[in-house]
Amino acid sequence: MNTDVLRTVLRLLVVQASWTYERMQGVGIGFASLPLLERLQDPIRRSAAIARATEYFNAHPYLDGVAVGAAARAEFDGVPPGTIQRLKTALAGPLGSLGDQLFWIGVLPAVAAAMTVAVVFGAGLPAVAAGVAAYLAIRLYVTVWGTRLGLAAGLGVATALRASRLTDLVRRVGLLAGVLVGVAVPLAGRWLAGADPGAPGLVAFSLGTALGIIAALVRFRVPTARQVTLVVMAAVVLWHWSV
Amino acid sequence: MTIATGTVAALILWGTVAGLDLVSLLQGLFSRPLVAGAGAGWLLGDTEAGLRIGMILELFALDVVPVGSSRYPDFGAATVGAVILGAATDWPVSLGVTTVVGLGLAMAAGATMPLTRRLNARVVRVHSAGLAAGDPAAVAAVHLRCLGLDLLRSGAVAVAAVLIGLTARWLGLVPEPQLGRALTVVALGGAAWSVAHGAMSSGRSGARWRYALAGLAAGIMLAAGR
Image (cartoon, rainbow over all chains, first blue to last red; front, side):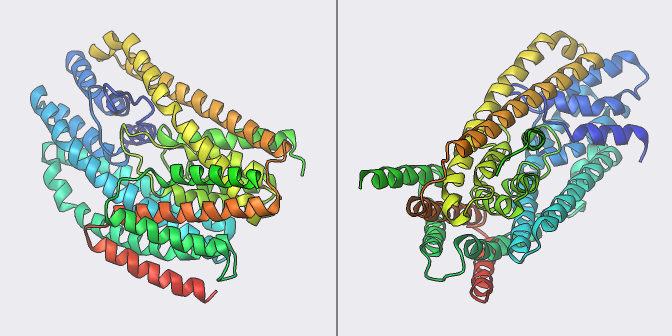
């Protein structure tokens, strides 16, 4: 990996620091793109490319490298500005959706559930450290992979993304996360509630699991479990003080 | 248990790292309750308390998808504050009240994110001419200042969480056993509701739903055999 790509990858690790409601990740994308766009010799083209890079953009942060690389490659190739803007606009939605599916509801819950299971089985702190190391390795790999893919493909990045079978990976990781979270929940309940099968905590945990599943299945618009828990706890405290 | 000044400083630093990780830096797992709790427990010399408190808050956090402009809780430093309260206590009694502290702090800390984003927008406006002109120095200045703002936010949230944890500990907020156990029961029910809702909401229309239920069945058998 050359120095410019390495610097871009490192900057992509802080891409959301300047997130705003107006430009969303725009300035962060511009900041990450700088090491690549500085290769442009013509100062007018370079300034225009940097200004374009800082405009509105939003996708999943781990996959931003795809857009950064593809836009930079298009700038090197002298693609018209309007086409580059359309490329970024076209990439934002799919990269956001793919990333959310793959990471926020795939890899992240899978790793969290795996750590939970390992902790329940007595692996303790090393299990948590291993989970963090594995997750960071995946995060870094995807950032490097995405930036390289974008740089290599330029305007053809959509075809390159399809050829990468990322969509298939999303499905597989989603299923893995489903299994792992499913396994982790009863184990966590048993560990947190204590060993006695008749313990009130275990009963509450089982009831909560059933209610959570039902609420999700019927799409019942209720307050979050966080809010409900805090309200019920307040009621318990008031009841306790009143008797 | 007395907590040394050096440990307090380390907890604030750990909470700050967790806060930065939420959005600005890495977005690795440092802001996750299980990780933040394990680290805080280790720093306090009670890793098991950190893991238990981190795990119950993690079950709540698994119902949160941190997408774009949505508002979500900041569990990192909040978990650190909760672990300070719960370290070296009888966990079946303290798990409920530490969950209250963790959830409350996480929701309050999450409310600081929109404020930081509005401050970011102000920095962008100040440098808008430089950004429009494609000035690399302006781009770098905006981004690094915004990173600095989130460092300040995360640091302030961490200081507040640690102080609240220490104050709650000093005030003896861990309740008497009967009330403490009742709160723990409620916390367990809420955590289970949260994680089950999160798992089913993200997979209710596809094969993932069936896989999650199969995993649940396997988990019940494993738990019953332990």
